Length: 289
Image (cartoon, rainbow, N blue to C red; front, side, top):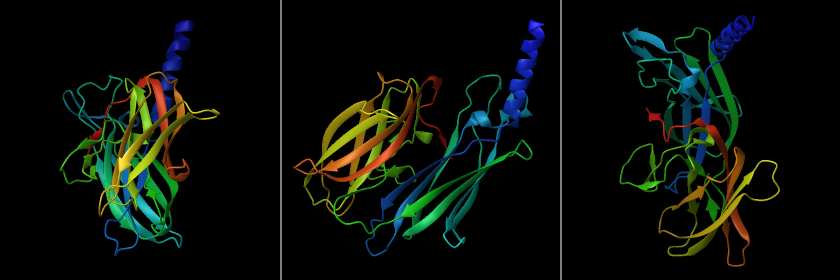
């Protein structure tokens, strides 16, 4: 009887997994356009499809492949499309689908968007599982008119931002950036890295920064550290940082990056979400298409 129940539980588990739609993670970052004559902001859309949520189809002996079709749309308030693109993502080929780790696959799009209120809509479709799709939506507000010291959005990274002359969608401010999709830091990822840009800083001006990490529902910060940055002429000033997560429990966290003056007054701040999972393995970077 017990063995029958075990078999039934396994069958139900596989059936539930097969019925679940593919997952789609959307990360959005807004940066100031370096061309001051053009109003609006540079929007970086980073879409990730976890490989675990896709169907792997046998394409040849010991060759299994998954594929997902992802459509990204940015919708204006009047319902018209400001941006739309569809791309096919294919995770690395597997020789054995019984292994538990299936790499995620990501792509990034960088576009110029005028100031305004929008809705970001992403749709993912499993190409090897008929009728399986998933739609994700989130609001998107673009406002590039802020004066004074201003921070861009904070991008959380799987690896340290590294100096690079590379010109690509995955490079910014002279740094190569490897995103942490969905802000996930899994088993073995004991340090969180991040990148942001500071605007309207005078050349050679030194600015005080404070980084705070707080777990959801907590009343005190789990980590706090300070740093300084010196303004660059004619461009946004890059901010890079790292936080040690090794002694923190699993859970959801908010990372806050603050810009403060000499009297310790907060001039500008931005938040980013982190999720620490000490049991699930998370690759340090994903396959970038």
